[in-house]
Each structure stands twice: as structure tokens, then as C-alpha cells.
Amino acid sequence: MLIFVQISTIIDGFFAPYHGMLTGFLPSPIAQAGVRDMPLIGALSDICNPIYVDRAERKSRSDLVHEIKKRVNIEQPYSQLSIFPEGTTSNHQSLLAFKVGAFIPRVPIQAVCLSFKCWNTIIWSFQGPSMYWCWFYTFAQLRIQLHFNYLPVEKPLKNEYPATFAERIRIKVGEATGLKLSQLAYENGLIDDECIRIGLPRQTIVENAHKLMKANELKIDDIFIRLQEFKDLRNQKTNLIDFESLNKAVCGKTHSEKEYLTRFEKLLEDNNGKLDAISYIKIYKKTFADIEAKIQWRDRFSSSDRISNQC
Image 1 (cartoon, rainbow, N blue to C red):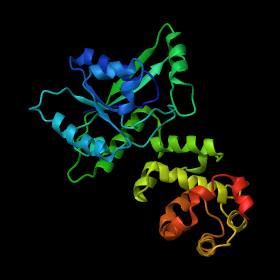
Image 2: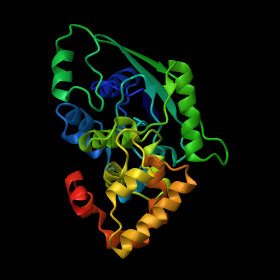
Image 3: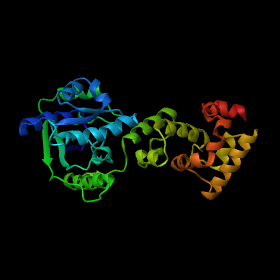
Image 4: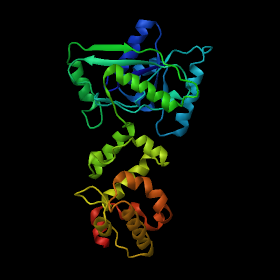
């Protein structure tokens, strides 16, 4: 199976047909379901007999592993598989954390390192230019040079975990390209967008959001809810929850609010009087889940005006 790295542009997918011209075999990409709706890219992807994955559906992700195992069986008449292991485009400054799903089947992997020599109009990432403008400025260029480097095939070691296998390959790619290894993932881009939308600093969540969600059994919507709560509970100057900001946000009039304040104050005492967003997200379920329904946070923390009026 091929993996293409580092993915940062609107034209990375064009390497797949070029690889087919060189080898005589057109690789089948593994791509998110939304790719099929992209102008030009979707049509090119469909030609390659792809596997589409819905990020939001757990069953879709589990079906991916089964389909990979099916297609890499030499008795099946399928083309070589290809995947973009970062799961999204970035700004070409570092390698994002690899998604582990494609490494679960434990098949040999060959990494192909991609780079381009042209005006920087092709980088497509969060908070960047729209796809339309990327295409417009890119087509205005007379020439774009594609450089690629095939790394040696890597096989999973005996009893090697998929995550370890993925990270081992990522390290080798980093060494070959000179790119730094980032611990951020696709979900961090979604969270950064949400932080900007609700008025939080972009760097509110600075650790791997995918691992954060998995370790705490959270969905992306759960993270968004916790971020809204954090925004209304925090001290705006420090972007941390402290005793003063907590008591401004929660009046403590009802029994459930008093219970909430008691638990939260104990939590702050155990954390030197301050709590950041990541810590709040991690401890919320364990500390407050049993009284959440009584406080109804979604209604209470919809705006700062509502909070101040209640107190």
C-alpha cells in the first residue's frame, strides 16, 4: 500500500495518475466521503475505484479495515491502495499525526514524499484561501514542478501495534523530508475553527485532539460544548478558569449550582487555583456528569448577557 505525504495542496491527488503512468497500475485512493463532491478532484478520484470513508460514522471506519484486507489479498483483482495518512491538508511546515486506521490491517507500506516547485498558491489548509482562489491562482502559473521520493517499503514488525507502526513510518518520512513532526491532527483544525467562531484563542487546544477525544470517549460536538462552557467560565485575560471567573459565571442559587460550585472549587484547589480548557474537558465527565442535566449548560451558557442577568 502507498501513502502520500506531506499533504498540503489542492493538487496532491494528481500524483496518483502520474504514478499509474510510471508503473502501469493506477492506485486506488482511500479518501473521505466529501472528496467525491469536490470539483475535478472528485471526478479523478472516482476513476481510480476509491474507498470512501465517512469520518463521522464509526461503522464506516471499521468497514475500511475490512475493505483494505480484502483488496490487498493477491487473489483479488484490485489495484494497489493509496492513502493520505494525515487525513487532511496542512500548511507544509510539519507532518501531522497519522491516522491509524489504514495501518491496522498490517500490510507493507511504501511512503512517497511529495513536494512542489512553484508559486505558493497551492497550499490549502484551515483558515486559508478558499479552494476556488487556490485553483484560480494555480492555473495562472505556466509551470508547476512535482518532485517525489519513493522511500523503502516498510513491513510491520512482529506484535507491533498499528499506532507504533504508523509513527515509525512517520519518523522515517520526517527524516527524509526534513519536516518537523507535529502532534496535531485533523480534529485540531475543526476545533481551531470553532474557537475562532465563539471568540476563544486559536491555540486553546494544543494537544492531539483525536487522542483527546478517543481517551475520553468524546465526539467533536462534545468538545464544542465543553469549549462553550469554558469560554463562559474563564477569565478572559488569562484564558483560564479561576475562582473569580467561576463565581461570576455561576450564582449558586439552586442546590445543583451549589453542588457544582463546591466540586469546582475543590477542583481548582487541586490545580493551583487555575484550570485550562484541556484539563476542563478531561475531568468534566468524571466530576460533573451526574449533575449536568440539572444545570442544563447548553441553555445557561449561550451568551454572556444571559449569565450576567441570572446573577
